[in-house]
Amino acid sequence: MGMAVVLVAAAHPVWGALKNASVTEVRGELERLQGVVAGCVAKGGSACDAKVVGVDVQVGDPKQGGYAVHWDWLRDALDKSKGADAGKRGELLRDSVARLKEMESELGSAQDAQPEFARARKETDAVLALPEFQRKVTVTWWDRVTGFFGAWLDRMLGGIARAGAAAPWLGPVVIWTLCLGAAAGLVFFVMRNLQRQRLRISLAGAAIAKTAWDREATAWATQAEEFAGRGEWREAVHCLYWAAIVLLESRRAWRHNPTRTPREYVRLLKPGSGQQRGLRDLTRMFERVWYGLREGRAEEYAEARELYEVLASGAVERAGTERSEGAVVGEGGAA
Image (cartoon, rainbow, N blue to C red; front, side):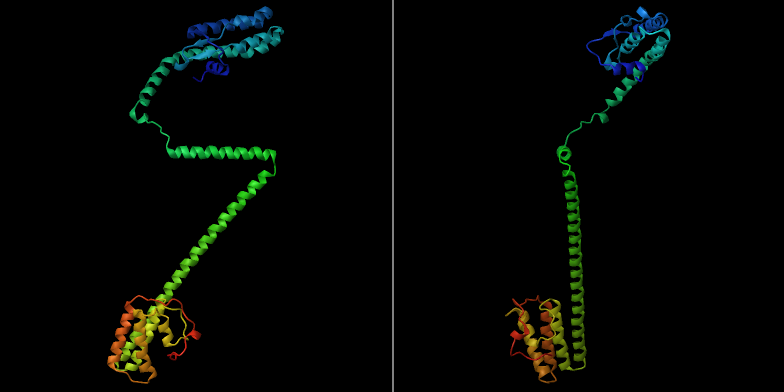
């Protein structure tokens, strides 16, 4: 209630049941005790007997805003003033007189506030009884898990603190362990990011290289068409052959090596596959026209064009391993 009487009640424990008293009775007791204090100040001696104070009382129901009134502080002040001179008694009891008057004043205010408090309490209970305030708080599995983890962490830290008090070296060891663990985690995170960046750069570089090879293959095929349009069949077959080689290289049929011979390219494809047969036929036609110094014919170019289209539309099948140049013997010369 915010009153001095209530503060007095809270400051002293209740040892057993207290005598019930009304507000009017407490007010009368306050008036009587003011007279007792005044008599003690004036006379001293037996007039300061603490037994005349009376017993502690209970005012109202504690559940309904009631409170207990204890007089221990007044008994103690009277006992101390019993053997003192008049000046000393006045000084010792000055606070007691002021406290009794304050209690009397606030007691009247409390009595006036009782009906208002009861009305406010009734209105509050009515609001809290509404459906929106009747929610049941349920404990979820996540609440239980977090609670268990928090309790475990608290026990662990408490154990570390107790162990640190017994072994001062343990604290720095734990701190350095945590710092090193954090540094290792940071290094691992940075390394993973760098690996991902290198992978992205590698994939981007491969895509760029493939695009460049595709453009070069298209350029060879376009140049072959131009030569064929002018009737230069030998040059057209030559360009079409290299368009096929560049196209297969862009599809990773083999690693780039400009020193290979035409027949070495054939051996790098899977034996018996459609790509190897097509490239073998195109290579033979290319060798007859280019190395045989023949002018070529339109029929040969048309056949070469058909073989190129077959190679361009099929999936690449590589041989099991790429053999080195020294392992390939007896093949034709370079273009």
